[in-house]
Length: 162
Image (cartoon, rainbow, N blue to C red; front, side, top):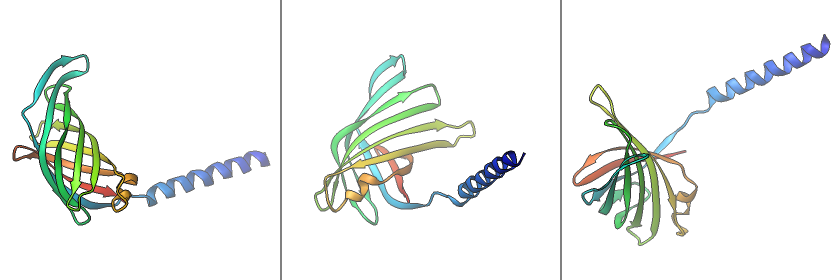
């Protein structure tokens, strides 16, 4: 009986610690940059087993934020997958060049969903890869972004998760 009470006490304490730890954790974000991406007209691959595939080539663009800014190089693209009439999956690869000449590979996936109330849920999860010492902190960063259609392409506000 005493052994059962000890086990019960340990389980209760562990559950309490996990619950308190989960309540204490929250995700803070910091504005990273706004990016405007200019796209070529899409090339339709057609209906595949995964959905309707449309490929958009990146024509250029710009990004601007407190810690980095520059241009979107004419490289990469968005391999859009339309799952149905209201849901699209994004698969994007970009090459960013900072105003001081450093190159950063930027990849993101995301979801665009048109809601019945007329709003759009448009979210992305960018990751980064660079050999630049100045911007190496991007290699170890998780980020999220909110998108919308822009002039000749798409636009995002991107936030680092701290």
